[in-house]
Image (tube, rainbow over all chains, first blue to last red; front, side, top):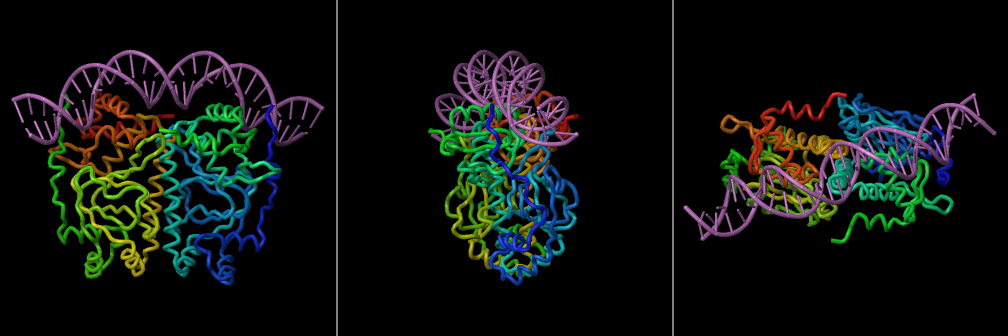
Length: 248
Length: 248
DNA sequence: GCACTTAATTGATTTTAATCAAGGAACTGC
DNA sequence: GCAGTTCCTTGATTAAAATCAATTAAGTGC
């Protein structure tokens, strides 16, 4: 008998954003920090808000890349289709993160598919409007370089993980990563605050749902995690960290 | 009895670059195209040339990232150390490509190790000098964004490959990729123009030298490739391509 | 030309993980 | 509250690939 989900109230956020939330979220973007509030208000006017329901696609890989999106509320997953009809989950986005067409080049297509995992509110801007903002934002080159370098590093870490770790290690890495990014205290328990099936965990970890289930069952037996349907709590992150750095 | 290498004369290039080669190579960089020749000459003066011998490290992962490098001549491999003491080969560079500290942020460390595969000539520029050039190069933001987006895409392709393909498919992908980038006609034969051991191929493909040997042995038997010590010729690239897209 | 080193090959065995299947339990909608 | 659906668990079997080992052959340096 598996414990019931602690992820209550996950999907109950409104579909729209207040002005305060808009300014708060947009002000968090790395290329908009340090911008005067008046200017941010002006920029904010270019963003259109739109809500999406769980499982709804925000955009699909290969379609015309027309907008840059910012996640105002909820959780989103980015995925691509690999070889052999395998779905590869590239990452989970939390509020404040941007996705979609970041290079503001019209003519490109979206490089991945974005799907809402919960009730979601997005803010988006067209390529042209974004380009205009870029042209008058000081230090945009430097900030965007930093962002892209960080993303390239994250992707390279993924290559290292997939290229040198066992399934157990990759799962440990994925759980630690998710906890670091999305973990929070709920009712005195630290939980990864996003509903994810074991199939989704499997496609983040280059393995199968059955393998994820086997390893997580063992981690539960060892008291390292607590988990149930679509949720995970890390009880002993240090143990998982140790799995990644076995003694020589 | 394995056929002898067609990669003759690989390591005989001079260690230094003529002015013509400098201007030619630097003019190829995506953020220096369209620049007037006089300006390019001025920029060129900031670059220091340095030669490296096969197996010599140009820089190492974790050391202070002080310079941006451009490969003027020869071949270089970029690698990182993954978990379980595994070396992961991230890519092979050819003349005209840049590597090292691209974000020109002092204080960062190099994200990977660069090692000369052949006799190599590099041109490099310090963070400060590069920053000064960036500040007065029109459209740098846009060009650098395009470059970084392309690199992020390549890394994501690698994640897809590692996350969804078998060893045979990954090897086929790697051989096709290398051929596309480094293949050329030599004595009427199309060869991948870089000396690579099967161990190096293995660390590009997330497998072991023995597995690479087994699959390449089979590819030779099928007449798909020709290979020997440190070299590969693709005879039937179409066959390898088919391996990546099996019918549903 | 030969000794030595490095790289590649192939066989046998073990390990890891996928695949297939059956059943159980949480969640949802009526 | 219950039927149906979705998600998870566990067992058995198969397949893929790693590991270990021995041998062969190309290349290098003296």
